[in-house]
Length: 299
Image 1 (cartoon, rainbow, N blue to C red):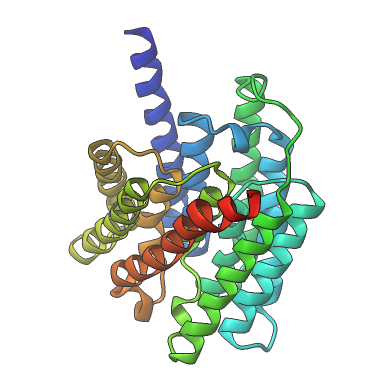
Image 2 (cartoon, rainbow, N blue to C red):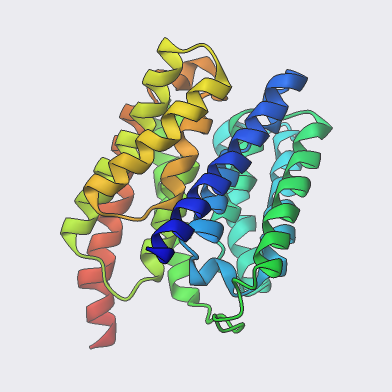
């Protein structure tokens, strides 16, 4: 009973932290304070205790902050949307290799200012503040002490991720659908899949359903409830229920309800459909790489 109570407490504290963020944004009437990947990071760090996210606690603060600042700067350049996304992905891979980190949510914090066209300093203040709190709680609770500090970087996986992602950006740009170039939670999960030793087809199907479902929950909730705070309050438990029924743990899924409430209007209504297409593309590519190409390279 004790572990169950602790788990429930972790969930409640994590959800309360995310609600606090959305509440502050509501009071200040500033949507740029809502950072979807904070929901994913909170779940992965405080609730799921993801080893790859916990092993270097200082990077919980400064790596997402650096990528957010880089994304904020790239967004101000006179480039097309697709070029901004492609440039950010390239810089992100370089940064992760230089800093020897596999903290996948850093992709999302870098992409977010481009996707929502963030222009206010409050965006930077928010990312600095909330990631610092996340890091502080990890250190104070000593969540990182059971995980090795050293991180092995697979440079081939980094190149595979970059190549498949840039191909997607190119294809959607040629189809004149540049807004489909980046769905942050999908890219985060894709990056983590490539790090794993194997990837069963059954898991790919579950993850496609889970992420598409989470996106649908966020969009439908916001259509019927014109309140970002209420949507967050209702949608996050529904995402938990969906993941529970599917028996999967995907921290990035919790980012979707928050992403839905801050997306520009043209992207909002098509988010579930685009998520389905993106997950099918990326997870199929990951399945092929993990089960065929990687095995041939070993042999």
